Image 1 (tube, helix red, strand yellow):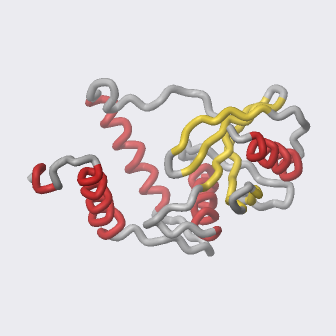
Image 2 (cartoon, helix red, strand yellow):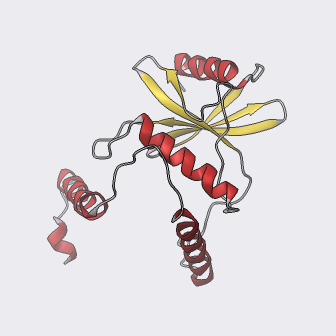
Image 3 (tube, rainbow, N blue to C red):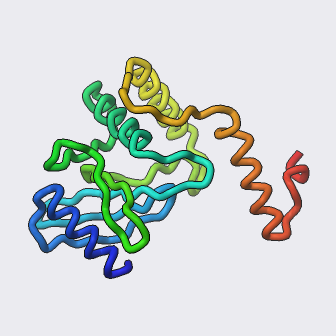
Amino acid sequence: MDSSLSRAIVSSLADSYEFAEPIELEFLARGANDNYLMRQRDSQCVLRLYRENEYYPRTADTYRFELDLLRFLERRGVPVVSPVQRNDGDLLGTIRTSERPRYAALFHFVTGEPHAAWHPVFNRNEVRRLGAFVAALHDQADDFRSSYHRYDFDLFYLVDEPLRLFEERLKAEGQPDLAFFG
């Protein structure tokens, strides 16, 4: 991890959550966001450092919507990872990086195992459990209201654009286009 980024993250965590240094950071994964394990004395949290994305409009409102939803679901008894409130009462902050300020949120650490419904082999019972959980989550989320706006997930976002990006990637790698799969 870039040492200037690490210092910026540690400084922000110490200021925003009153964590006493030393704070240890371990990069976990890069996906839609960068995720770090934060260890401090006897506690652990996960820091999500939000990344920009080409086709999904990301704004402070988008992130606050997500954080509000997680808090709402937690209050309803849905087992979700809950965000940690900052000293200023907000759930979302920014961390100044060498590139630009990036939005960040801290989450309580939950122990467990990676979900294994499809990997390494298809597990019908796990898929059913996952489906039941997702259905319960959606059922509870039906009552959720937020003052923050989130991008609407329409067919363009869910189908058309992922297929376009997939086809673009196939072409870049010299593979057949999507017609190959038809």
